[in-house]
Length: 344
Ligand SMILES: O=C(O)CCC(=O)C(=O)O
Ligand SMILES: [Fe+2]
Image 1 (cartoon, rainbow, N blue to C red):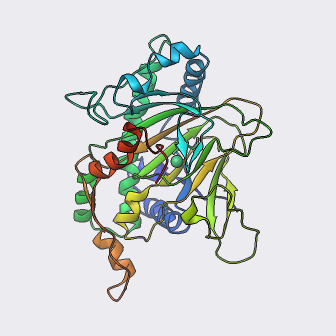
Image 2: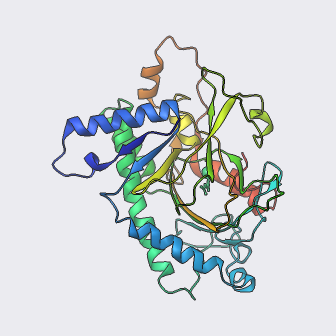
């Protein structure tokens, strides 16, 4: 079993071919219903050399001496923006075998004593790092809006409904992360990144070509592959399913939907558990971009999703959330040194 590959190309052309756009939108809808994960072919949107360069720059950064990296530690800012050491993050009670460098949407009046409100920290000793990463965030913001519009059509939204949804994501409080994964020690039963769901809207993951690292949990539908629930958070531990690998495909990013899409679709689309187990001998780099709602967006079940679920549906309505409050609930844990950034 492997994840579907969907091309965003029809949504990039100005001479919009409605039939081709609809095909893409339907494929997005199916992928979100079934997997919550898909490959998005963006080869007509970005030159593949561009994200590849991001991994090269990240590799240079992670190769710096520890004290150099610590100069931009997230503890010097708001405990969210900056560098986090190997094993500093804990998911499901276990240390993750990765180090990372996190950037968030810049804010107008930075105040590092306030959670999330500090300033991004870039490794100035690496030429081009800041420019290239900032340019990538600009491109991914554009891609985010394009994919959201394509998904709105896939969900059967009217133009008016799409414009309302657009107003919730047009000033995305995005997050961008460079993650460095040394190989897991041979005798380790740990994780490079423990099982988690992404909490926001859309994740665009670019990773170096390392195979067999990222794994996606597919709940068991039919058939009888032996389920492996190792590493699942306790509350998911009883759910049967299989882990499949999602190896990188040239020209594509791996996309998954976060918990905000679960709220918008009243549970129709599922945010899917995933984890990283990197056992090959190389140092793996991934660069996820999290296209998130606006900080002040009010997220609640969309009429289009409820139309699909039907008027007679007895599905309990998902609780609305204000995205920024929800996010603070997540990183507040970080800020106080409690839970990890991937914990639910
Ligand atoms: O590195 C990867 O392949 C996945 C990282 C991830 O799931 C995340 O940062 O949310
Ligand atoms: Fe993730």
